[in-house]
Amino acid sequence: MSLAAAAFLADAPNRLAGLSVELLRVESPQAVAWALCDFCGRELELADCVVYLMDAGGGSLTQQAAWGPKRAADHILESRIRLAVGVGIVGRCAKLRLPQRTADARLDDRYVTDDQPNLSELAVPILADDVLYGVLDSEHPQADYYRLAHEHAMLAIAERGALRLRQFTGG
Image (cartoon, rainbow, N blue to C red; front, top):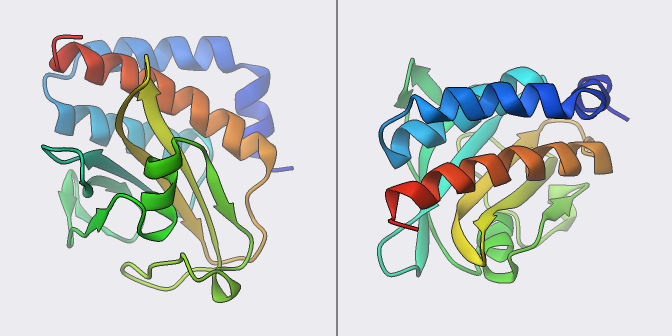
């Protein structure tokens, strides 16, 4: 188990309360995405973290924020990719509204290479009241990196983000 993920889960109520306070300060869906990436990357000590938000119409997702190598500067993405719902691990997560994890991307035909190839990926839905707002995704260069603790932690973080995103849509 990841020590950072285990430590996060052991103190999840306090850490998530801090995230909720931080999210109250942001004033746009894009700012929520950046706050989620920064928080998730920092708290779980991730090599990479990206937030995809649903595009108008709900047929695709676009990268809005990143933590790690894809981040060119503070709150600036080096490049953005758009994925159709159902395509890739992220798109599959969005379609099923369930976490998707791969232990070895070389053996997973769902895997879509972004800025650099990685071996592990974990994607969780950003979901509240059966409304999908996006996907919180992380990749790692080590095979079989992500554990259930990562999944639980990322789901809790994504849920807080969804609750804030819901406020921007009038929900």
